[in-house]
Length: 385
Image 1 (cartoon, helix red, strand yellow):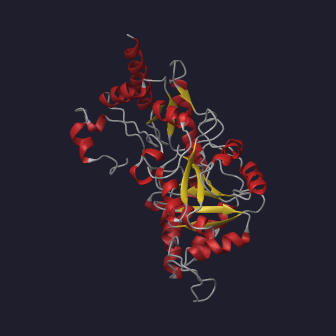
Image 2 (cartoon, one colour):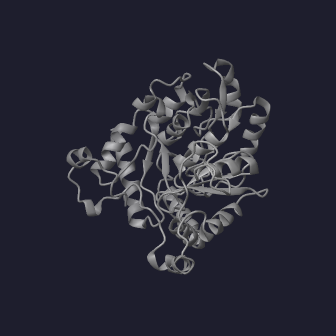
């Protein structure tokens, strides 16, 4: 369970429901102590704990093997730092614009600002809420300044096309990094750099961590240096950088999680399939295209009829079913980013008003699924009466 997810306000204002009977919106799936033991013994034997040790390098190789065309992987201490350092590794003019969707988690926009660029929020173009190369190309003439980078987002882990974004990059000169934070399952190619989060809430997590996959060795070499004080095989700090290395202990968790991945994926897919079946006769509830059938993630975000999200959320909460608006109302309304330029965002605003995260995790039980489905049907039916 996400023990730290509730605020003091949530605890005071939430209806009095037996907490033991509540269904949390998420429950991380992490390797257990016994799964880690063989890797911890290797750490003890080697006496190597950080600084690109043998477990980190093995973990990176196994991650890279999941990608096409010989991509290489660089691990980073967390996903937000991975995005930040990847942008910095491109050595773009500070103060220039980075185009990104407002329909994303705030970490995407934080990374842009931390890298010295200015977020330019562009509306998404598809029913799935994705910023597309064609949509951004059409928006570029209206940019309020020089656009040097773009950071499209894999919506809740949905598959994207790095090849299409590489074509966009080649045509425009705008550098592209894909934020596929929740996309471990779907990410399979890296014609442009792709970031995947390894946070505990993701389908494959190490606690805190992330990685960048890319086919560009020069970029990856600079990114690696950015995680280690800009050292490049010596003790010379060549430019401003930081310390963002993954430890051997985090790599041990990652290797154990990879050992279990086929079983873990099957459990997520089975839970998704059962939840889809349970809600198949519920009018007005729409799942992401392919979620749980062609690809999996650790969240379930559904689309509800316009104007129903607030009362449905309140009804589910009263029934002991937790929910989450994972991306809120979009980054553009967060105080940290209200001074950033934005195009008109009608699709973003519509998605924010009708999207709701339901409880979903790998060991979601049959009784829990039936409770979620029943509570959601009752909430929607109550709005019609």
